[in-house]
Amino acid sequence: MRLLVVGGGGREHALCWALRREQPDADLYCAPGNPGTAELATNLAIAADDLDRLADAADMHGIDLTVVGPEVPLARGLADRLRAEGRAVFGPSAAAAQLEASKAFAKDVMAAARIPTAASRAFQALEPALAYVDHHAEPLVVKASGLAAGKGAVVCATRREAAAVVRSMLGERAFGEAGATVVIEAFLQGEEISVLAVTDGRDFELLPVSQDHKRLLEGDAGPNTGGMGAYSPVSVATDAVLERTRNEVLHPALDEMRRRGTPFTGVLYAGLMVDAEGTPWVVEFNCRLGDPETQVILPLLGGGLTDALWHVARGEHVTPIARRLDAASVTTVLASRGYPDAPERGAAIRIPQGLPSGVTVFHAGTARGADGVLRANGGRVLNVTAVAPTFAEARRLSREAAEAIEFEGKVFRRDIGWREAARVASGV
Ligand code: AMP
Image 1 (cartoon, protein in one colour):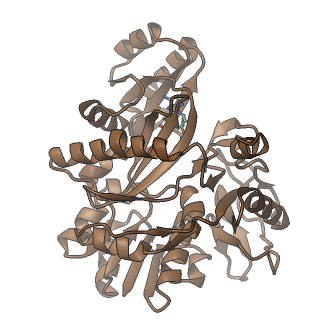
Image 2 (tube, protein in one colour; image 1 turned 120 degrees about the horizontal axis):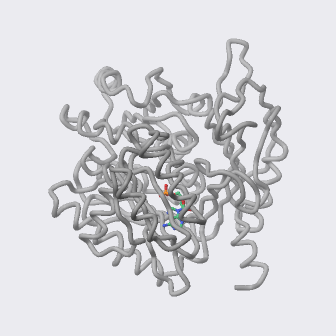
Image 3 (cartoon, helix red, strand yellow; image 1 turned 120 degrees about the vertical axis):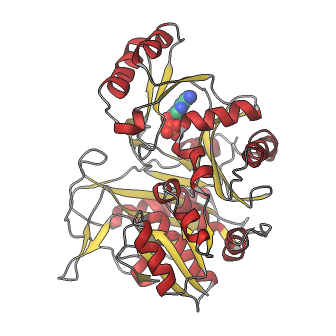
């Protein structure tokens, strides 16, 4: 089998790792990849959003299955393009990827399908948006409708703050075209979980549920980031919550996308706020695997991932994906000083030999210079994933390995999984 993974972050390193584990003899390519994927696959120096060159590479290497990691190439039609050329691709069409690429579209789908989500309205003109804010309860949330690398949602304590955000998005185009439409919505109370479904458009296989940590600093303080760590499983995601998520969120969303003539295939990622009654309110949909969720989820699988992706990519029925029930997983992101605004680059990285078994270091923003030295080359540099029989052990291993890896300006959170740890401690 000839496989191509598109993307170059920690998610794609974890994907290459999982595919390689299941397919030791496959020809595996990654575009553009990173120094981590280089140890498992042949890296192709092609940007993840260079559709022409990706299509050429798929031809040249006779790729059987392409797995697309990031949202941007999906929203630009990479899956459509490769499919039109007769290739099997795991990832939604550009039309279906609108579930992530346009929050206004996602809200419209949710309203039509009666999916629980915060009451909201979308605006393109400044004055009506400000008038809406003026009568909105506090707190409230203002979101750039388009793709903003996870940074386009602003939770506002007051109407005044929300008005300022609306002005910056619609008036000053602070998020460029992504903020040409804003969605203003009610604030949801509860605990967030990420539920990812591998779907053929009708049926789906749930992946292990995880919880991300969006804020930069311990105690969930500081600015929003792409994610500073995650863990799985999450005890908030009870069987009852997942049953409701299947029936009230995932099936209705997939049915509505089929009804519109744009079936969604690939990974449907539901970012949920679970309230005290166990209602799964949708905060957002994504059209792909999460980052860093992938780095905790894939090590918990027991097999069947490649087969499931392969069948879905060929328009067939999704096949079962096994999961390990005897283990927990925690990943800690090591970021560079200055992340998320202006991360420093270039610091030499030292990863100690002989990290404990169960610990895997996934590369995100790293680069190997001509001198062969591994260096920080982005905001999120490494993901340190630990798998262990218990959550507490996985958490300890991930944190200790995160401390043992060295580079100048390393920033990380020591409290990944703090909610779960508090539950474990209180015996809930
Ligand atoms: P989004 O880009 O829509 O996923 O939003 C990013 C983050 O902002 C989410 O992970 C939540 O922590 C927070 N957020 C977004 N919308 C809401 C909401 N309606 N209520 C509470 N928190 C929200």
